[in-house]
Image (cartoon, rainbow, N blue to C red; front, side, top):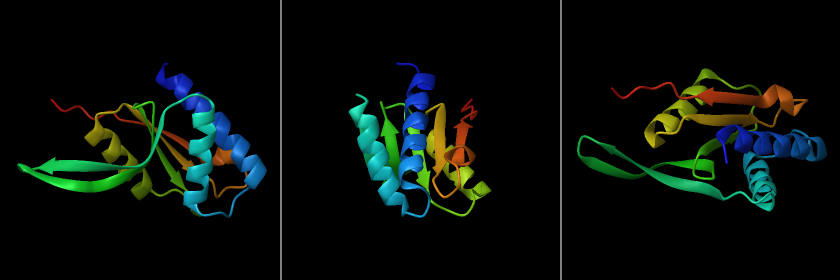
Length: 128
């Protein structure tokens, strides 16, 4: 399955969830519901995936946890904040770079419409 198709399924589901539940819940609620809905669509979803980081010959385990990893390809970071900041975007870009993944979704459920809260982030990091 192509990454754009996976992204499309995730976006469809988060819009449906937002229409039903609206803004105002905690991030972990949206994360759990989204994971369940995406799994029901037949996709493999890992939640709160611990990810180690290797630096200077040392392994730091776990350095961070991904909210969702879908089909081992799409990194999804779920937020329920007033507004997405550059810090949130940099956080997702770092996750993408460390995992060597090309694209991720930053989903903020705290908007009046979900369309306002969807941010696709591409990893243009080149390790050469």
